[in-house]
Picture (cartoon, rainbow, N blue to C red):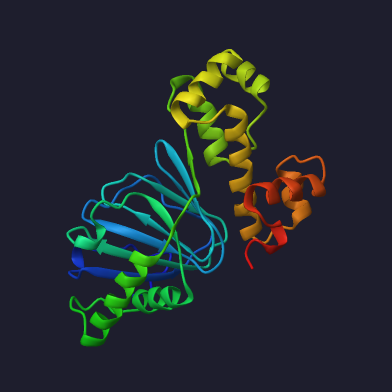
Length: 257
């Protein structure tokens, strides 16, 4: 069986094949922190947006992109309205995975169709001749898919831990620097130094990047431009549109076209 309902659990150790596809329909999901020691994982959904958290990084996965998660990486995946959830588990001893770290890649129409086919395979323990042909195309498409940047580093400094938990998991808009300094009891200079050291960005730049990625999430959830603008505390819809275009090169309305 390749379809998994939300009431069922997947036991990877009981399925003896190198590539395991999984299809499911999920809404309001939170995996909690976990890892797969013997399998790497690919996440994909044609609609909706997922968020992955590690202890020091947030990665968003917009629709029609894939997220590669290496084996052994502790992570947590959340999403609000992803319906067609697709996941592929890859045995770690496959040479095509060597040296690949956590990353988002683009998905071509052909690659999307291949992923869909794999995710509906029965778990028989062996691949048919046709499936082996499909897997060769899968690996070709995987190698050709271009890496894209949707990651935001999370400072690990102890003074910011409660702040990070609130703003990365509860998705509150991060405050301005002076407000954050008051909140955590550290000076603005200290916070700036922490962010530059641990994220290679100033706090102001980090906050803007957070707002951009949150905007992409909300747009993927079919929120209107006005709703996104209000949630992210822009002064007007036009200010949000200009901000979004400056960072992505296109308008919010055209981003997923």
